[in-house]
Image (cartoon, rainbow, N blue to C red; front, side, top):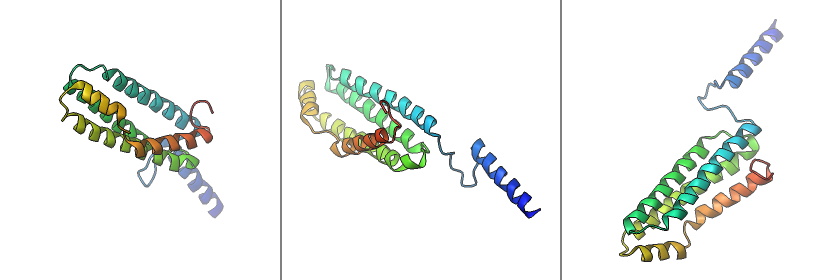
Length: 159
């Protein structure tokens, strides 16, 4: 009888986990395929944000350029938050955390750059600053390192 109760309890725990329920309130760990799919979607969002900011370098005013840079910072922060909310497979947890932090740092560095260009008198001066500044180096390194790890683990395209 005791063995049967343990078996029923084990099945109940498995069912709760499969349905997304948990006593801790956290989300169910993503399968390898589901995590890859989420990363692919996030990569597409990040590529669009990067493309949009690249096109923004055609801005005619400092204000328009600042708005474009702010939009990129907001998109990067949103993507960072999205990555942070993922519950990746166990072997990807550290890289996922590093990626979320790197993206967060990129957003923060981009906001700093936006504040700097807001003080500039001409759009050309602001564009030159953006092209010559090292940008959010720490965040970029963190994100690149995390993506390299995720690639080696087989979670990103080309793996």
